[in-house]
Image (cartoon, rainbow, N blue to C red):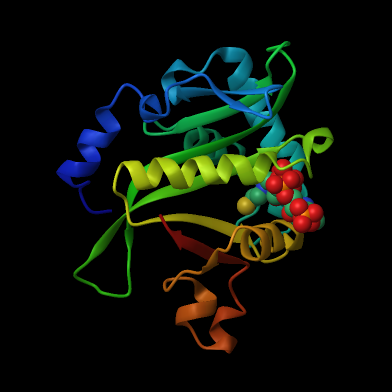
Length: 204
Ligand SMILES: CC(C)(COP(=O)(O)OP(=O)(O)OC[C@H]1O[C@@H](n2cnc3c(N)ncnc32)[C@H](O)[C@@H]1OP(=O)(O)O)[C@@H](O)C(=O)NCCC(=O)NCCS
């Protein structure tokens, strides 16, 4: 893993990456989106975010090449650079709807000499009873705005090929495409078949 650039160090030192949006961030009035760094996430939200990932994706992870790694997932979710957008009812903060966790990182490109600065969406998770109401789209759009504001090149994410609903959401609804480093884009079909995920991206 190469050293982060000065630009990314500066971004990751910012107390808030959404201050330019003049919080509170709201969606359809009834949903408020709170911003946290991993180390400021209250314990109740640490539990809830973890459980939501497990509820939504465990069935895909256990069938994946790498399986479900509980400790690894916790380490990834609450890494120091993890930034959270947590959607909850405006009137009842305990009524949690979904969340997006992202990190500002450098990612490989097909050019060995060049790393791209990206807003990487590590998790987009919406509670089952809050889906299909545009919340997932809203959270992704927020991330694109954040990436644009901080002058990053693109928004990136990894998705299991088997997660057909999410794949449709990202590609058909949100306009993401296979990133150049995704197995399906840079390998022969025979080699790409061994991978159970694709990497999608979209310019900020
Ligand atoms: C993918 C996900 C975040 C989308 O959130 P959402 O709030 O329902 O998204 P929106 O309401 O903005 O958009 C829903 C649209 O995407 C499609 N879609 C999204 N998720 C889908 C799913 N799991 N199955 C089928 N269609 C899905 C719907 O057809 C819908 O299209 P429409 O608006 O044209 O009717 C949500 O389904 C989810 O949390 N899934 C489980 C976790 C997951 O797979 N996360 C992605 C991991 S990479």
